[in-house]
Amino acid sequence: MTISTATRLSKIPFSSIREIFNEANEMEKRGIKLTHMEIGRPDFDTPLHIKAAANDALQKGFVHYTANQGIPELREVIAEKLKLENNVTVDPNKGVVVSVGCKEAIVGAIFAFINPGDEVLIPDPAWLEYQYIVELAGGIPVSIPLHETEGFILRPNDVRDKLNQRTKMIILNSPHNPTGSVLPEKILKEIAEIAIEANLLVLSDEIYEKLIYGEVKHVSIASLPGMFERTVIINGFSKAYAMDGWRLGYAAGPEELIQPILKVHQYNTSSATSFAQYGAVAAYIGSQEPVYEMVKEFDNRRQLLINRLLEMENVSCVVPEGAFYVFPSFKEVGMSSKELATFLLREAQIACVPGSAFGQYGEGYIRMAYSTDYEQINQAMDRLDLALKQLRVKGNSILEV
Ligand SMILES: Cc1ncc(COP(=O)(O)O)c(C=O)c1O
Image (cartoon, rainbow, N blue to C red; front, side, top):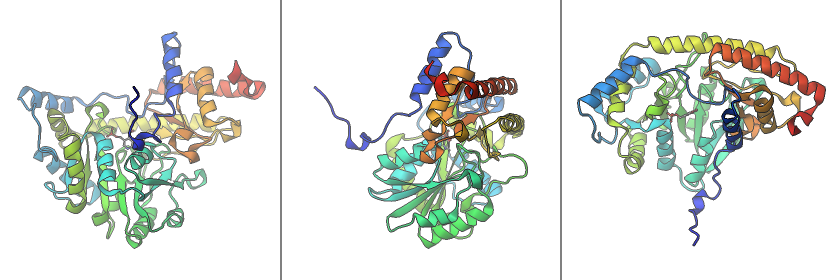
């Protein structure tokens, strides 16, 4: 007997990077040491005061379902944070839903607003989940290319070019995965103008907002005039507080946009984990020193990685201003990004993600996460340099060995 899957799943693949991860696992089983630059999470532990708060809640018996939208204490501190840091005022009772990671909030927002046939504008390259969540909801993802020559900053005219009667939503992600670009306020204002003219809903994924370097500032598009009523802010605790395994995020915005998301959330997960939510309260109200320390360390690694990559022949690289990724171009090397990722794994023992895993415009690039320590990065870059030099001598036949 065969049981067919729902048609909505028929076009949805498992991740295209599985072969590379499988090969990396095999290599490690054989005792080969790899540098892991593929993982999109901090290599730090959750700060102790956050763990202590969750532990305390657990000991006190906060082990039951919470309100669907999350515990009131957490919604209050989220609303305060949004006011203070993002200049956005939300009602903690009606304008915040605490979710199981940002991802659940993104699924909620897309399922709450996207009808079959609705078009959703998505920068390309992007975190590929957006595309597949839109497709699961029956929507049509529409790519807006990002260009290396523009520092991977969305061009407002490219957004205009893709508009039509079916366009319902635009997804923004700044700081950006996989390129590390940060949308400047000037561009956000132009995108805001388009969103207002075309009556678009904006899903603003701000998960990397605290991982930002130098003088660059994060601006939430929801804080711009006329934008609050059409923006769902997505944020969470996975990256800045090294809490990815805690699975906590949120959607915030006006009641009219958040209550429909709450409806999806209610039938999906009921509520996020009770005691974990107390940890998240501590994350926002407690010392931010661990975040600053982590960002300082990421910044040092970022500079090291960029300097090392830029010294290499046939490699170009935009300097990322946020998140913890670099997205160098290896187009001059003359391999597909998947072949190149395989090459880097086999010849330089570096596990990383081919740019094509982030969309068609990611082809020719490689995403390297610097969530690995300084020394490892340095050693990995020595091996990469050597492998590229050997490749120039031997040609691509190195892959067939
Ligand atoms: C752009 C982006 N948004 C959301 C997420 C998911 O965050 P969470 O762990 O809160 O679900 C990720 C994780 O890598 C991401 O890169």
